[in-house]
Structures are given as C-alpha cells and as structure tokens.
Length: 72
Image 1 (cartoon, rainbow, N blue to C red):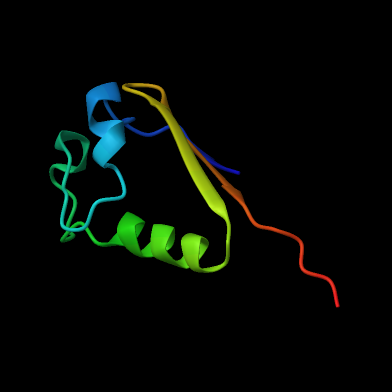
Image 2: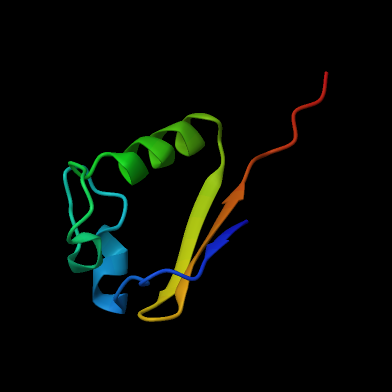
C-alpha cells in the first residue's frame, strides 16, 4: 500500500488513470509524459496482480498492489 498526502486525483479522472500518455489536471507543473502508471499497471498485470487507486482532491492518494503468492 502506497499513501501520500498530495494534491489528490479527481474522481472523474480515476477511470483513465492507467492509460498511456494521459496527463491529469492534478499533474500540472510536474514533468512527465504520462507513462509511469501505465507501465506500473503493465508490470502488475504481467505478474497476475491487481492495482487499485483511491483518491480525494486535497487529501491525497492511496494505491494498493496485490500479487499472487507463488510457491515451488
């Protein structure tokens, strides 16, 4: 679980959060091209995991990552 107390992400932007080249209003003034979260999602998917995001503007964001347990 990753938690911050940053700007937060508007609810209407959450469905597109993991799209490539998507920049959000909350990211204004921050360098980037909108690939970071799409790459994280690709890695999580590749390993059979899940990623979820909860956010509130002005209060921060929480990302939850879950991966299956592999045993040999």
